[in-house]
Picture 1 (spheres, rainbow, N blue to C red):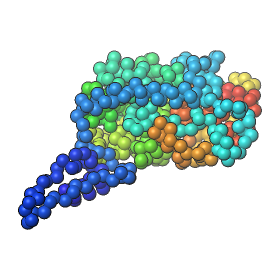
Picture 2 (cartoon, rainbow, N blue to C red; picture 1 turned 180 degrees about the horizontal axis):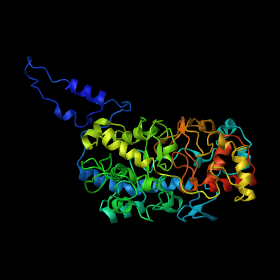
Picture 3 (spheres, helix red, strand yellow; picture 1 turned 120 degrees about the horizontal axis):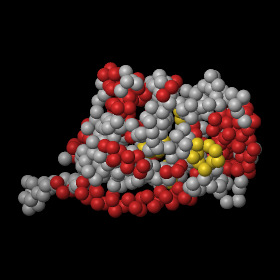
Picture 4 (cartoon, rainbow, N blue to C red; picture 1 turned 180 degrees about the vertical axis):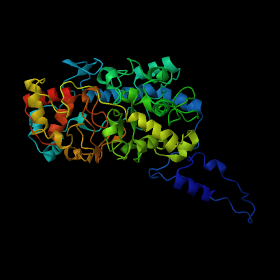
Length: 481
């Protein structure tokens, strides 16, 4: 028993449940028989484990009942955090829409500490902001809607459409998506192909699924690309969506597909936690990035720095789907993709996904001054000059294909917020800004709800001290991308 328990503590492969119940009782009236040794128990200060428990600690019915009953409280806790941090109103930018006409949300949504303005904050040093505890709460890392559990969570509009088309229910009984629909990308988003720009939106306004992809793309894609798209739309088991008792759906689930997050090759802002960090409270929320323009990118994953889209595709199935735990993956049904027969076709299709049209950009993806307004031209000058945006976001895709550490911890004291510990962030991939107005919310963990928030954030991070008119000019340029 001791050896077995030591192994469990070292590997985390079994739960420390009911240990004392297996003790063997000995006759105490016989001097030749010694009492069984006391059973080991988990120390109170047991360190965090790299592995997750494999053996179910309770029946599915008990887990379902417990977590279902806790759901309303968990979501209220997250809503309270969001309302404390942000202005969540539906406030649209006049005359600015996404590629399929959904209004772009405007205005700074992050709430300032009492008694201070953005201009005053910009005049302070990072150490002064930290000492006076003036870093806006909305600029701190945003926790997952249920940080202690994590896992993929999808917006309600996506869940409804998948259920209508495919009959699969992606509703979790323990948590819902947390951000309001008007602050998310348009749904379904258009899809543009580098090989057929003449077609415009090849989805014809539909959400692409296994139910309609052949009808939509037969005759447009070659057979290898068509099969790659099929695989990107095919459901495979995942940590919370699977057929085991350790799942977070009421009914056993086929799983999720790549395009449940990267909808139509873009994004629905579905969220998750990174799988490559331990312990749980240090794991970072993930904003699903668009796949548009991946053919011109050289790093994949917000912090993992995977070098090819093939690596990214294979990594997602092998690791990210199961929180980076191969033991759990084996239990729940890992799908091992064949590199040549499956990964390559999936990657080949992804590399066809193009950025949306930008009528005011020229052939070098710089602003065409014959079409631009004076405000947009001033914004471009700021972008490549005083605002320092182009240091990391040069044209043509407005990314340097590198990773940078913003060192935002200069501005605040690390703390625990809804089970998320706000430690130093580390290096983060530079995401492309082409088509950026189509991809709210912003930063790698959704903490910035609008581009206005993003301008204020980087004005402090980079110390650029932009004036209010300059911020508006810069926004006007960003909308042209």
